Length: 96
Image (cartoon, rainbow, N blue to C red; front, side, top):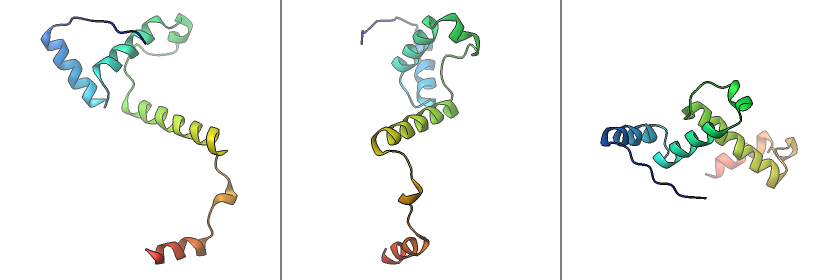
């Protein structure tokens, strides 16, 4: 990964930090996402709005999908046979 230096005025920097905090990310991640979206192929951009930063809902969905993909890749996914019976579930609660 390459580093770049960008100069912005104080107010832009302050507002960028606030927005990054609202999205639970960094200013660098915001800039990285902006640049990634900027250089994407026009066909990829055609269906999306001009939003550069993902919303909290989009971020949650992306993280959830990444976790599920990891589970499927490393553990073979979820199987009904992995579920505990109702009796076993209640036994576990009684032991606490």
